Image 1 (spheres, one colour):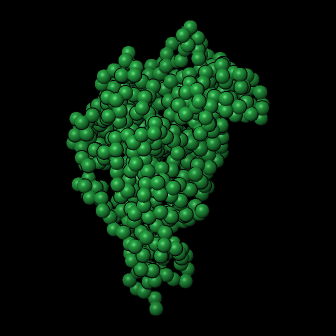
Image 2 (image 1 turned 90 degrees about the vertical axis):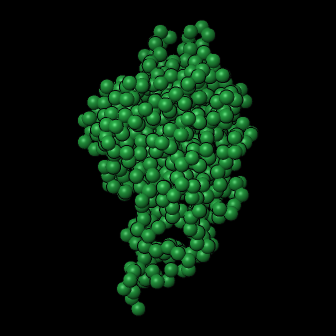
Image 3 (image 1 turned 120 degrees about the vertical axis):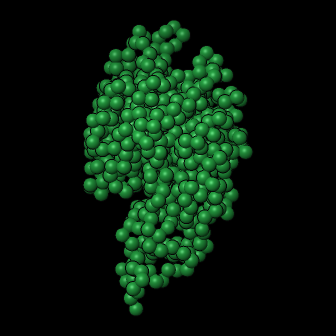
Length: 551
């Protein structure tokens, strides 16, 4: 007999262990991490929303047109949210050479030589993912190494961290970079002991000298990149991401991908204030000219805010610190924009209702970021803009208190420590404050989980493992007292990360009325050992009730 109290579902998942993460952000801030778990439950979806969840088989939601998925006792979790990555950028990298995982300079050169043989002379070659720290030589490549492998092509390759390029002589020549070219503000052009170019370019303002002469991708190529990276993200259980470093061409490509049904994850775009394109006055003018601001769009594609890179990274001494580095004592890093420029930007963002996400790896840059947020809130009178810090790699005790007082969220990337082991390079003093997660979480700071993909893998379960185990690439357990529980780690990649895009009232949990984004996995996360969590397999990923990935 037809029910009159609830509709039939379009999709019904049953025979499942369901982790709902049915908490509010305020409850999490207050220290509540226990959420409802159904050991033999169901979840029902209609028109892209959850209409039922609980114990049992959910028979009352099953109609003749209902698609039924038997989870076979596996675990259903909310769709995973990555609160800081570069999805578009990662998609375009799929068009180049991926050096991730290789173990020597010789392998690097061989892969480059092979691509050069397949590429018409004179065409650009792009690569990414090299990391000399895992090579036999532990020495950065130079332009001479690239010249030897590909003498007839302009070549540039990202380091894994994406804060360093290495370019060959042809690329440097086309960009007009000579040994007499001054370092751009906020960046550095690498030189050897004789003052000659070594081919290394540090930070965006220097790397941008190459970017300006590389032929741009077509809109269709960008849409293809969106499709390709969508398959990668969905296979990892990611249903939503906040995508940093967006330009107008990227935004147009996303609009086209959505219109053509080629977008399979919820995309939150962060418009990038790129130092390589101009100084702060230029960006303030662009902000004023834009019609759309934070929140423009819908649940599938929207403009999230603006992203600013304020400093570099600790390993290279480019993150702005309060004190000089122990491993590079002649520098304390530098700010890419001055404090005064940041305050101007913050005040304008506040007036225009822009959300701000600021890349800060140093404690000094974090101080300036929080000053910027205070200026923005004062200008706006709106204290729910949710301005946030990206990375917060080094955190001092007084900063934890200030983050909580200002209600500033931070998005962290434990996979970076797991795969790169940066803390081993920066000395004991800074390492003791590096990649704090549990301390701010327990203090009531909203901590989101993210990967910075493609800097490291986008696999959220790798990140959860890193947060739980505190394992580092250097072979140690870095600050084990900062280890999270499995429940806390899952919260980072669900409810807490949904907060950054103002979606915590409809995403990041499995609740009636919320978006029907689910992931079926083979691991009971709350009862599993850390290594089991790391090896978790995604069986199905569902976005708005539609299966977008199936193993």
